[in-house]
Every structure is written in C-alpha cells, then in structure tokens.
Image 1 (cartoon, rainbow, N blue to C red):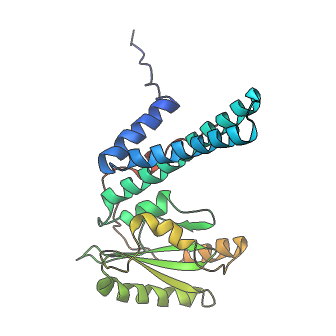
Image 2: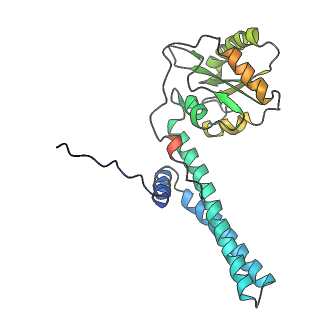
Image 3: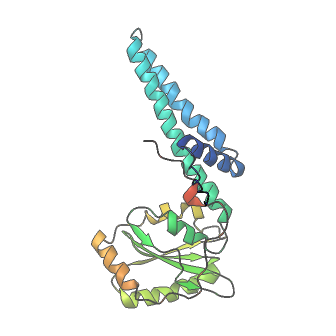
Length: 235
C-alpha cells in the first residue's frame, strides 16, 4: 500500500511573528530598538496613569497597567509589520519588476492595478506601470527619470485617447534624488486628491483594459517576499 504523507503543519502565530522578526533583523538591526520603544512607552504610561489615578485601588491599577501592556504589544506588532515590509522592499529596490511587487501586494484600498507593466524598454528594462484609484490614473516609471519620462508621456497619450476626461499623474521610482522610494509608493498614491468614485474607478479600469499590454513582461524580482513578511494581525 502507498504510504500517505501528512501535509506540513503551518507554523503557529507566535512562530510566524518570530520568523518575521528574524528576517527583518537581518536587514534592519534597528528594529529591536524600535520594538522596545513601541512596547515600553505605553507600558510606562500605563504605570504612571495607574499611580496617578488609581493609587490605593488595586483593581484599577492592574487594569491601567494591563491596558498599557496590551497597547504596547499592539504597537510593537504594527511597528514590526511596517519595518518588515520596508526591509523586504529594500532588498528588491532597483531591480526590474520591483514596482510590480508593490502593486501586487501593497496597494491601499481604493486602488487597482496589475504587476505587469504596460510598457517596457527591451534594452534597459525600464518599465511603466498603470494603476487606477480615487486619485485618478497614475503612471509609474521604474528607472531613471531621464529614460522613463518619454515612456510615461507616450503612455499618457494612449490613456487620454481612451479616457480623455480623467486626470493622469506621473510617479517616478528610481535612483534619482526626488524619486519615490519603493516602500513609500503605496502611501504616495493615497496623497492624490480624490477624482474618481468607486463606480468610476471600475469603469475606467475596464476601458483601459482595451489597451494592448506589452508582451514578455518582467516578473517579480527575487528577494524577501513582501507578502510573507507582515506580522500577523492580533485576533
């Protein structure tokens, strides 16, 4: 009889957090101090409040201190998740397809896009990505601005032929001093002034789907997977 194999058991929540911490610490040694600060400050505040407000009341003091501990744990998990994501993106920054990784796993609510670029330079591997959200249409250039600016302009002309009344923004992700760092790309998109409703976002995305995509797209670069480094949320 064939021997049945038992599927590998997924690590528990604490083990997952430990793995995320270990991966992050290898690339971000300061994460230990950030976590300590995030945990100690709320605990200290809880202790001070307990003595100021509930001195002599054991139950009240315990509740305030416990609240500080719980808040400290929550803040530490939030800090770990953000530092882990930043460390992950720092490992793939500058590689072809890095922007696609952010679009695939890091877009905020209200934004939609695909990790496949809409335009690629075969010689330099510079690329243009397109996302649609509340701020309108955003074309993201991956590479030096002096090489991607013309690609962005060409793509804008294509987009405006399909949806002429929708505002188009440019964002540069590359080595230039004024470019947006990879780990801040998702938050950069949320800063554009609201221009489209949820229904309009869907309609614009559907109309833009008619534009032919560039064949032979580039894949997600190798490195730490940003989708697997986030600290699990507390239940």
